[in-house]
Image (cartoon, rainbow, N blue to C red; front, side, top):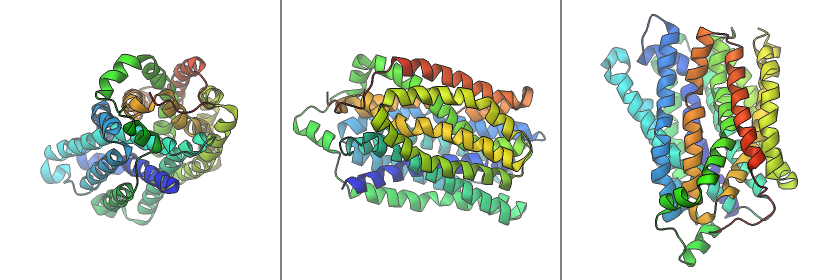
Amino acid sequence: MRRRAIVASVVGNFVEWYDFSVYAYFAVVMAPLFFPSHDPTAGLLATFAVFGLAFLFRPIGALIFGRLGDRIGRRLTLAIVVLIMSGATAAIGVLPTYEQMGIAAPVLLVLARALQGLSAGGEYATATSYLVENSPPGRRGLTGSWTYSGIGLALLLGAALGATASATLPPDALAAWGWRAVFLLGAPLGIVGFYLCTKLEDSPDFVALKARNLVADSPLLSSLRTQMGNLVLTIGLVVVGTAQVYLVLLYMPTHLSARAGFSLPQALLINSIGLAVFTVVVPFVGRWSDAVGRRWMMIAAAIVPAVAAYPSFLLIFSKSFAGAVAGQLILAVSTALWAGAAPTALVEIFPTRLRASSLSIGYSVAVSVFGGFSPLLVTYLSAVSDALLAPVLYLVIAAAISLVAALFMRETARGELAST
């Protein structure tokens, strides 16, 4: 049952991030289809604005699905959000273009992304809470780290499909149907995830809470009333991680192709190499956090990207394929330091009774502000200033915020998960 719980939780995150990956990786292809413009940068900015717009709906989804996670349980809530997310992803694959329907085309794209944002708002907290609550003693860090290993696999699949499609299909075929096929794969992925969720029991922690009649009647209000300090702490801890994930793992192919002079297949290959290393390193970091503690890992996860950002992007802009790979690998390992320890650390901050609601709110607020609009912001800053310094400055500011938060967090790795 524990292994199946891990698989179901990983699949839940996989479905969400598969969508975000293919949207980011195919942004260059989709921009002229939905936002035709004489200026390629303007079309790309509009496409990433829609990417970021979905994140404005994440806090709303957090309020809806976080509450459900604490009221009806993690398992059923996860099944619901996986089904909604995969359906919205597949819907993008059949949308008409601007040429076919005019302004209605980007409007429909916005609506599909809004639906994805709503479901994603409750997916991470629900899946991660369920995963960690099913963890064996002394291995919560390792178990929680599978959250981002699954995310790494989703991003890797998206990048691999993007690289294969862009390398093998003529540009006309890629624009006509190649990108659509990749989005349509979201449907079977969602069906598999939904099926797995329906075959599971709820987490032992939630079942015990329910048996004692301690399930919160108003988890959102209780979270805002009793967990405000922990919510602020969560937002601070998530800033550097979400900045790295969306900038380093999702946006990088676009930055490599639009600013660093690489072709799209080359950019996706460079990114895929980094994603593979990230996916492998994350569980080792999670296990390490079980040994040395969550607090020290989170402090390191804030310091390393601040130090590594400039030399990494200097290598990426060296115009050398090997240099770009080296820079991407440094950034991937830096991101893995956060991704391996953060899921469990964030779950451990909150009591079981309010965990899904509280984590949904804190995580969604941080991701909405510092994650979803990072491609848009960096694209704009790179266009009007220095393409090298824009992402570096963004990462350094994010790292500074998270370092302050990590210094104030308490160690959570040694004790049991709090129930109330």
